[in-house]
Image 1 (cartoon, helix red, strand yellow):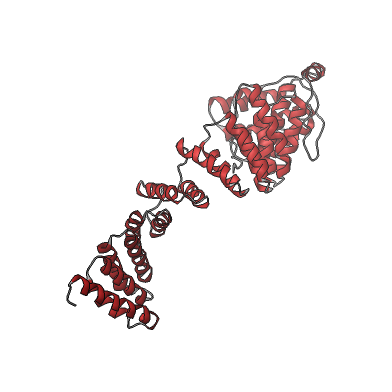
Image 2: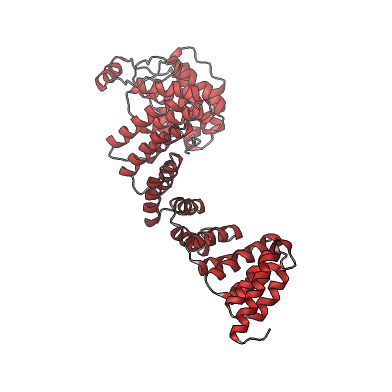
Length: 436
């Protein structure tokens, strides 16, 4: 989910020295008033706001500080020039606080910057452009400092003061609500941001991301699905969303929709993480299409998209077995065994390989796998000896079949079955003219 990105305080000389006219904005204590003033109302406020200029004494110090900042890139020198100034008039004080706050922000002294620009904003005496700038900077610094409630308040003041539908501001408001875990409050600013971006002829991914985050955190998966579908209608190239949409469908236990979505993403080349490919494999397994599950798993193990581990090879092999592709399963069990660290686990994988080869009627390979299982101290060796007996018997190697059925007879749980097989082997050999 998208998290708040730190804002960078880059204050230009033009921002530092702008002086225009403006009008007061109502204070907001908690939430945002999204009913913005009309352009006509804003213009009337601009026209009625008085124009002022700083006093000559303060102006000289400001110009000196500005020269230090712009010409010599001496931010600390500019700060020192203004630190001891004591403006008497409210306008001078607000203007110096705004100017000095900008300098502290440029010097990354954000606490001091915030206190000063907030004082300037609250005084509400600056010219229109400066007041708008200082309101927004106060909000941005609050967001930077993780004072999210303050950020919401001052973004709200900026909106009511300017009437501007700036999509980036609405996104910052949504971010602030996300950070405060007030997830239900994310939707409105995100929706307005979508409209505002669209009014500029743009489609932006971030409002959709915030809305999905809001619904996901509240476990409203059906609503998150709607947002992702709407987002993909306008931004179909957002690769990550296809996987997210598939995951949301899985959370809703809508396997068919999940598979359909993931298949589209897969064919379009949008899946690029191990977890994505495994999710698709799991979906094919869930709807009992094991061959596709196995072939996709194998393909992406071999290509390096999925880690080459014993467990992953066993997963693919098991799916091939379910699809009755026993020879393919056996090959992958062999690769799994080679990667298995535990001796007992390795023995079991060789046993499974032997069984897969036996079902594939590749009896020589089956016998080899069973022998490796025994060499690795497989659990329940009597049963493996019986399987080894079958492999040799069906390969018409009656002497070896007899040898291993006699080994199987040593185990009480296999003795009766082994005795029956021994008689059968001897009879079959006799019929074939083979002397045992």
